[in-house]
Every structure is written in structure tokens, then in C-alpha cells.
Length: 573
Image 1 (tube, helix red, strand yellow):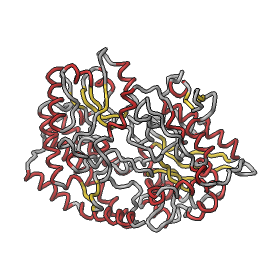
Image 2 (cartoon, rainbow, N blue to C red; image 1 turned 90 degrees about the vertical axis):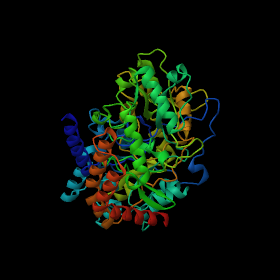
Image 3 (cartoon, helix red, strand yellow; image 1 turned 60 degrees about the horizontal axis):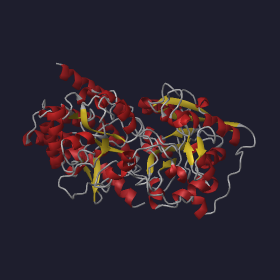
Image 4 (cartoon, rainbow, N blue to C red; image 1 turned 45 degrees about the vertical axis):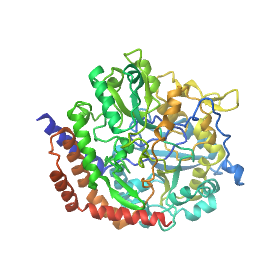
């Protein structure tokens, strides 16, 4: 009876979040804790491959292309812009107003533009956005409008909710224009299919790599004289040894498949399905052809493996009921030794090591498992350079030129530096080599605030959309060598050749059709998958054939076709 009630709760959660899914925000210039992805936060500043290798000197876009200097203040007279933006759940109890954020106040001082924010809980973003649009009373600036508007960015443009920024970028935004023209992926990803610019996107630097993936207890591997697992068979043997010797299991999120397809990519398919996270649906492409993971033969094989491992006690028995943090394991399970393998970012390695009950506790990153040694997986935590998030200017805005210049300032050399490092003597100091480094106000906050919170309160960690200053590569977070090595381990056997860029856009008709079909499909797939994994759904070729037949009846082919049409248009941009 307990498990039946859990399925009811899960279905309600999936349906709820599908209706009011949080948008995937863009990069704020300040990095955040990558172990939590409630809004898919920006990656940590990536360290060099080795502590002995000095990174190449960063080159500013302004050094390659002469860009007009930003003239401050932007407005001769003080003006006010209103801004609709969502709040990361990590910050909901800390930031209730933009006035609390020092950087927003400083921006008002230097630009003469006050920004008043309407802060919305991320989980209800779509619902609240729809209510605002229905009222016709738009704020001047809109955070991630493409993800929050029912028919997407193109629909918001066609319905005159958003202004077409194409000429505005050309006339008033030289910094942003120069950056997006410097890279083909930037250029393609920041426009809708007909070439219009609907919002100003947050961008990743070109050296961005994923900052989370599989994690394992190295001390246990050493004690048992085991090699780091590479293949699925290796991982099975290691998990078996961990269970027999330490009573430990592997943690997976309650969706049944870790974000980033870390556990399923070796089967050549996308497996992650969280309908309330934009882009967390198991669509992928091979040579330009869109696929839906659960419709593929390999999905059955993947579920058979998970079911076998679950029945053998290798997977945490209560994974499906732990919904407090959908992409992060409970800290208690890590520090107590309950888990020997899990999936997370590298930023918490030291925190867990210091809190661990075992004095020999030592964790490291390892590669996504492959089917056969020497294989390359083609799905991973995606590293596309254009995010799903950004800021649009609404048709209600009376100060369009000033709004555009304000946002463009965020992309200037001066603005990028401010939004990455903040204020000298308070949030950063220069080291002996002349590189900015965060102070303990950010890294070890005296009030016990997390780095995510302190950046939101003092730097550019909340509401801004930009691209990190090139000097972020020099940031010294005090990472151990294991943390420094982690990102490079995670990409060593995988790429994202099968990924679909998040900025692929559908027409109004396609968006409307998919929005009507996907919530029910998501609920059905997620529930069936979990029941199959834990043994409450019979898993045979016949039942899987029935599963796919049901998806066909639910018009999954229509959904795939709409995704295909959108991808085709993106590739032709």
C-alpha cells in the first residue's frame, strides 16, 4: 500500500510540475553550486586540467573587435524598469527583493536605471507568467520568456508580448552583438528560426565543460584492490563488492535516471525524464534524426539492467521515495557510507570529506559507464554555449533604448567583470599574479551563507544574464586535485554529439500541440519506468511492446515530428 500511494504522489508531482515547469535560466556571471540543478544553474568556473598547468591568457572580445565604450550613466534622468524574474529555490528564503542585492543597487547608481523586480517562485513560473500575460499588464523586462510562454519565444514575439530585438541589438547593443557574432553556435542559438532576436541570451564561455557526473568512493576501491569502473560490467562488479563489504549501494534520483544521462548514455539513448525541468526530456538526435529514448529497443535493455541491479540490492532501495532534492543525494547517506556511488557536482567534495564518519573517506569522479571499453558515449551533461535563459524586453516597455543599453552593459568588459567578481576589497582581491580571487565573504561566509546565496546578495548571481569575464579561469576555489581533475574525467569518454540544443524553437502550432501531449506522456513514461525498475511492473518484451504501443496511441510520433521539424529549421539557420 505504501508504494501504491507513492505512485499517486509521483504522478501528481509530475503533472503539477509539467504544468508549471521552472525555466532553465541562463548563465549568471557568478558560478553557482553545480550539485543542485533546480534551475539548472551555471557551471562552476572550470579549473585548469592540472594544478601545474597555467591556463592560457584570456582574450577579451573587445581586444579582437573595437567596441564603443559604454557611456555611464545610461540615462540622464533617473528612470525605473520593472522586471519579472523567478527565484531559485535555494534562494527563496534569502532573497525576496532585488533591493537586497548589492549589485542591483550599484547598477542603479552607475546607470541611473532602477530595476524593480517581481520575484516569482521558480516552480510556479509558467503559471504566474501566463496570468501576467492574460492580464495584459507586462513588466518591462521578462526573465526567460521563451521557456515561460506557452507557445515559446516565437509565439511571444508573434503575439506582441515581446519586442523584436533584432534592430535594437544592432543599434544599441554593440557588446552583445560582437560576442554573438564571434561564434557560429552563439549566432545560431540566439535567434528564432526566422532570424529574429527575441531575447538576450545568457552564454557560456567557449571553454565550458560539464561540472557534474558520477562519483565513487576511491578509498573503498583501494581497500578492495579494485580498478575504477569503466564499463557497465565493471560498475556492477564494484557495486557488488561495495554491498558485500560495506553494505553500501548506488544512489540514483527518484526519476530513475540521473540528469545528464550519466547512467544511460552507454546504451546510446537519452533516458532522463523530468517534465518539470525544461529540456529534461529524453529526446536526442543521431545524424539529424530525432529520437525519443523510451521508444527505442535499448531502453528496454537499460530498464532490465536497472531492475536486475535493484533486485540484487545494488541500488538504494528507497531511491524513488526520496523527493526532497531531485538531483542531489541526501548528505547523510554520503557521509555515513550508505552510498558508494552517486552523481553530483564536484563543489561538495571537500564538504563531504570533512563531515564523513570514516576518516579514510576519499571520493573521486569517474567516467560515465560505457558498454565496451574504448567506446565513446554521445550523450552527457550538455555543453551547448547558448542557454535557454535570458531577458526579453516587453512591448509595454517605455524605455526600450535605455533597457537595451543596460542589458548590453552586462556584456561589456566592465560589466562582465563586475558580474563575475563584484567589488574589490569586499568580494574579491587580486592575488600575487594580478588575478581576481574571491574573499572569504564569498567562499567562507561568516554568517554561514552558501556561496550561491552570497553571490546573489553581493555579485551577479541573481537576475542577471551575461557571460563570465575571461579571468574566471584563474579563480582559485581552494579545490583539491580530485576536484580539479573531475570535469576532465567526466568528458574523457563522452561527448554530446547526440544532444539537441536547448534553443531549438518550435512554431506556435508545434508548441501548442506538444504542450498538450507531453504532460500525460511524461507521467506515463516516468511511472512505468519506476515500476519496472523496482519490480512492480512486469518487464518482458511483450509488456515493453505494449508500453510503446500505448505511447503511440498517446501520439508520441506527433511530438517527435514536431521536434524534428524544429531541429531541421535550427540546422538551416
